[in-house]
Length: 145
Image (cartoon, rainbow, N blue to C red; front, side, top):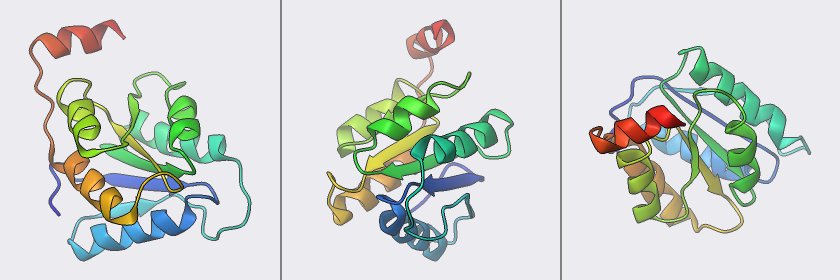
């Protein structure tokens, strides 16, 4: 796994806790720096609180990109996208994730722990971290958001 980003943060809700830990471990083993914003157990929590932590950190430029994990990825994406400057995308397969970076300059990847296989999640995260934004006509569109 490689990353074009220097500062990555990650968070989840209780449904995504085990996958968050799995992703974090793979990123650390690849010698990539990552900040874990919680939770630190699988006890029940409210996903909007954790989406806000990651979104806020990115909007303050404390991290370049973030990863959010919940049951479907959707709740986290909806919550994260409420903050100005955030472009959170649900990565449900490799192609959707690649396009979210190339065309939409997504700065948060959301994944569903209950809908995506573990082996696919690592591929999705890897694609997200190494795919560059294409700019050009896409930049014009991003500026309209």
